[in-house]
Length: 456
Image (cartoon, rainbow, N blue to C red; front, top):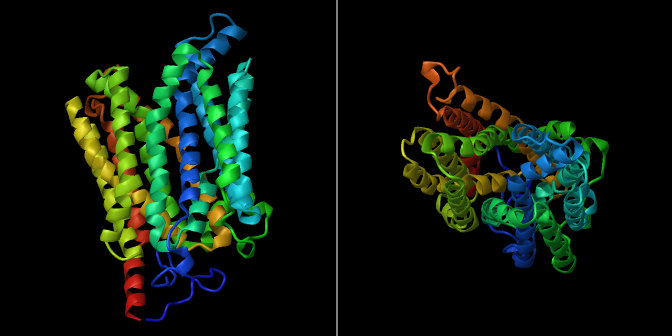
């Protein structure tokens, strides 16, 4: 059987969902990702999520301290919550603006320098946050942290550089595993360290980032060959223009809508989880933390290990990846409904165990998209996708918490028809269902094209 040439987007046009011809086997020198580099990428993503998680339990208390310092008695919980929400939004906004910038810069100058400079910047930002004497300084340092920490687009591009297409789904599983473990460890460690000193978590996060930077200086090779690098332009670094640039990549453009809807569901769930479980099941902080620990462990097991076994078993190459995406999203839709309908707290743990299997969708989707993107454009495309995630991170909590407040039985203004605390999760399920439909449409030609290539 004769292998076809890989896609060059400047020479070929593909309808949404169509894939370029994929060689039957990767070249002999690309049988698998470089384990040392992948370990570094995993650690980098883990520390990025860990740093975000460390901030969650101590952020409001630090804000109260700074408010009281500026105006004694002004550091009320309500004021701290308001400023904390703005602080989280400002972090996400910087991620939106700078994920495309870092991705495009890495397409021009390589992944290694961008990653190392960003990691060093994150470490210094954490130390600056720890030393913040005023609230406005904390805002500036947190925004700088959002800028330097917008490395997921570069990490995803690095994985695409060093991993042959048939192994990318498994390699991208480390992204989900890192997020899962960071989601578990971060808030727990942040709360524990915060008991000793409210600023100690920032010193720890900064120290870990500096250690990781030193580690990367020795073990991280460059992944993007000089001949695969692109020219740098203002358009490629513009976060809004990047979305328009996805038009050159039909599958990525079509899947972008699905990513946005799915992240609206995910961030909506995260923003109301504590409120929901405390209101409906009267869970304590320990019980809430235990449930989140189970979520993180499930994500780490499925995306970090089982995904690389399950996805190939569903079909060859793109076929298995498409089926994994659709099955994973369907599981997610059902899980959101289950969370909203669960009458007893113990039911949540049963749903978590099943919902974890939906984690196969994320690495499969990333693997599918990277098949259609040239090496010199991986960073820009990944930056566009990361920017979409950042928009959802800003918008989703506002909508989900509003729905929860309207549908909470403890609210005096709640109408009888809406007196169900799970309504916000039903909304999340609806968003996930729309994301499933978008993915179904975006990938509708994948199996046909793959089977046609196999028969030719």
